[in-house]
Amino acid sequence: MSITSSRARLVKPAPEEDYDVGVVNANTDLIDRALGAVRSTSTTRPSQPFDGMLTRDSETGQLLWWDVTVTGGGDWRPAGGNITLATSATRPTGVARRSDLMVFEVDTKRMIWWDGAIWRYVGDRVTVAVEADLSTVVAPYSALVAYVTATNCFYRWVRDTLWVPYQDAGGGIAPSTRSDCHYISSVGQAIPNQTNRYLAFGVADRETDIVKREIDESGIGHKFTLNRAGIWAITAMYRWSPIAATGARYGALTLNGANGDPLAADDNEPPANYTGNVTLTVGTTRFLSAGAVIRALCYQDTGSELQMVAGWTKFSAVWLRA
Image 1 (cartoon, one colour):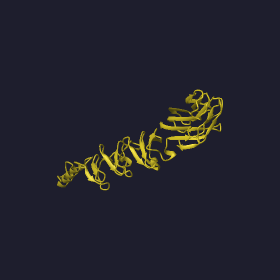
Image 2 (cartoon, one colour; image 1 turned 120 degrees about the horizontal axis):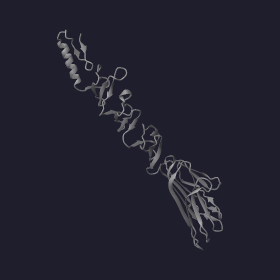
Image 3 (cartoon, helix red, strand yellow; image 1 turned 90 degrees about the horizontal axis):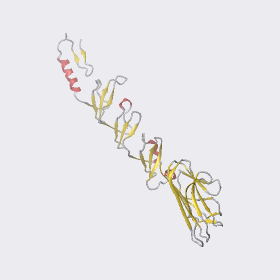
Image 4 (spheres, one colour; image 1 turned 90 degrees about the vertical axis):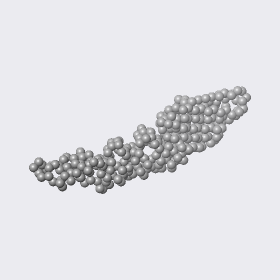
């Protein structure tokens, strides 16, 4: 009784059987079919494939091979060393999605690969998307940068958990997309002699959601809470009104708590009978934790009350990077 070979299903006549030209011809056809990849489509693939058989999908250009070890009797799997053409909605699924599978998305013009669990974009590239679509960027990887046309800002995916504004590409149009703020005093502020006083900045020239301005516990000045950890550049400018009085004018940026740790400070003691303005600028660039509270503190000991000049007393904070 004749038997068939395990892969190509060639008929192997038994010794006692007669020579059959039809069987020989059928075997020849099977050998011919196995010599190269069969051209097919997703719906016309060979119906009786053998283990290792190759077919080229003319719709996608994908080279496939038949794997008999797949549960359920076998399945077509992408052959290694080639790139599959697909759209973002028609990428391979199931067992065809082997680890290291490369796909070129013809609709997005992006290269993507399957790491065994999720799809990941290839290379550190910029993805163009509107702000509402940031959450739909497929499998963002660490350091991926996305440019959002709606806000004119760049975002970076950090710690595989969140998008962080990476760079303002010309001025975020909303506080939610900015990483900097600027506040100005709206009125002159009286500073008593030999008294520490936190300053108020009533005009919000530029705001960001990552810095919260609120009235200090003293009820007089403002405090600024930083809602993101990272490298910050903090600056304050003080201008004292002109008065012919000796004594120091002092300005500082403090961190946390009443009369907290000074981050930066400067002072100026003009000569006797000086009648011009006294201007100080203090600033620092350093790492600050999320929740850090910054205040602009001033002090003077001229012997009488002094006024800060409205519009010339300013505060700014810029988040630079994580």
